[in-house]
Amino acid sequence: MSGRDAWLSLTPEPERELPATVATLRAGGPVTAGEVERERARVERLVVRARRRAWFAYMGTVVALIEGSGGSADPRVVRARELARQVVHNHHQLLLGLPGPAADRTAEQRSALEAMTRANQSSNGGQ
Image (cartoon, rainbow, N blue to C red; front, side, top):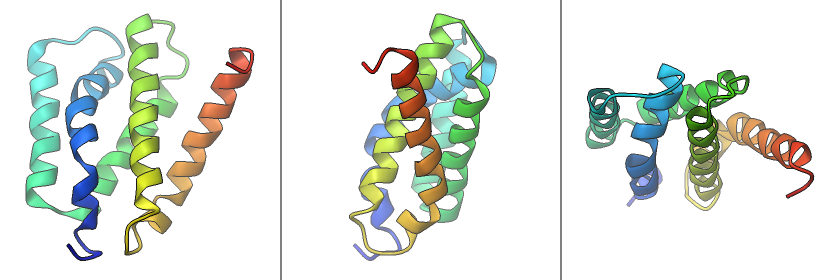
């Protein structure tokens, strides 16, 4: 696997976890099975087509959804936001060990996710 397609080795967890969480974040609350399936199909297309730029654009969209959902008190949105944050942060951390420029290209998102983690820990009393 070259540096150009090494990112594909990191997609199983996001492929599995993000569709339902992203659908919830997009909807701002409860979602239908159809909404989750549409998001699952979107993610699958991105990975199957193996377009790194499109994948990272999607991950950027997920980070924006996480940031934009911070004011919601809906427990489903809160859970989705935290799971999405963990999954994307883990994905971006793993990029640090891969060849190529992907880790550099996601450095800003990684920093934003780390800031969210610190803020979350502060609001939960350091837990």
